[in-house]
Amino acid sequence: MNLADLNKIALAMVTSGKGILAADESSGTIKKRFDAIGVESTEENRRDYREMLFRSTEAMSKYISGVILYDETIWQNAKDGTPLVKLIEQAGSIPGIKVDEGTQALPGCPGELVTVGLDKLAERLKKYYERGARFAKWRAVIDIGQGIPTTTAIHVNAHALARYAALCQAAQIVPIVEPEVLMDGGHDIDRCYEVTQHVLRDVFNELYVQRVALEGMVLKPNMVVSGKKSPKQASVQEVAEKTVRLLKSTVPAAVPGIAFLSGGQSDEEATAHLDAMNRIGGLPWKLTFSYGRALQAAPQKAWSGKAENVAAGQRAFAHRARMNGLASKGEWETGLEKKVA
Ligand code: 13P
Figure (cartoon, helix red, strand yellow):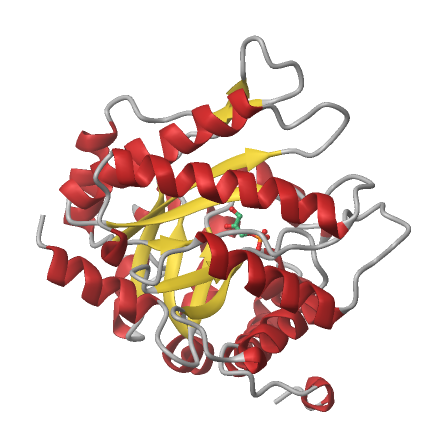
C-alpha cells in the first residue's frame, strides 16, 4: 500500500467546491427510478442515461470530483465506443466502484441486515483498478425501530466495513466507508443521534483494529435528522449543529473528508443541510456530498428517456451539482435555486 497516493486521491475526492456523484444504483434500484419517469430499464437506456450525466461537462468538470459506478456501468462503452470510465476521466473526475453485493437477513436478528460481498473481493478490486477505479464504496444499512438496531447488527456491519476497507487499501483503492442509519421511521432526531453515535464509534474502532489508514479513506455517513414519519421535524440549523457535534466527537481528524449520502431528503434539504454545516466552520475535515437521489432526481425527470431532452437533463444536473458545490463551501443561498442556468 502506498499511503501517500491513497491520501492524494482521498483529498481529491473531497476537494473544495466539489463532491461525489453516486450513480451506482443496482439494476433493481435504477429500475425503480426509471419506472417513476416511464422509462424501460434496458441495458441501453441505463447506458444512455449515465452517458448523458458523464458528458455533462459543466457539472462534471466544475463540481463532481468522482463518480461511483455500478459493475455493469464500469464495463460499458458510450454510444461512440468510448468507455464510460474514460468520459469521467476526461472531465477531470475520478471513477469509483460500488463493490458490496447488497444485503442479506442477519441470522438471530429479525428485521436486520448485513452487507455481503467480501468473498473474492481482492480479485474483483484488482480488475476494477485495471479498468480505472481509484476508489470504492460499501454500504452498510442500519434501521431504527422497535428494539433495533441491536449491538449485533451494528457490530457485524462495522466489522465487514473494516474488512472491505482494509482490502481496498491493499489494492491501492480508496475505500468510501458508508454506514447508513436509515431515516425511515417515526423516531426523533435525538434517537438518530444516539444510534449514529453508536455506529460511528464501532466503525472507527473496527477500522483501528483492522489497521485501516484513516488518511486513505473517505467516510460517507447519514446526517443526524428526524425520522421521515416523525411529527417533530428538526430545523436545518438543528440538523447542522447536531451532525457537526456528533462527527466532531466520533471522526478522527486524520480522515481527509466526509461525503454525506442524501438518504431520502429532498434535493433542496440535502443542499441546505450541507451548506449550514459548512457555515459553522472550523472543521478538521472537508464536508461535502456523495448524493444519489438528491443529484439525480431533477435530471431524471428532465430527461425522461428522450434523446431530445438530453440538454435539459444536463442543465438540471449542472444546476444541482453547482448548488451542492456551493454548499460544500457554505456559499449556497436559497435564492440561487430559482436561477436554473
Ligand atoms: P442517496 O444520496 O440517494 O442516499 O444515495 C447515496 C448512496 O450512494 C447510497 O448508498
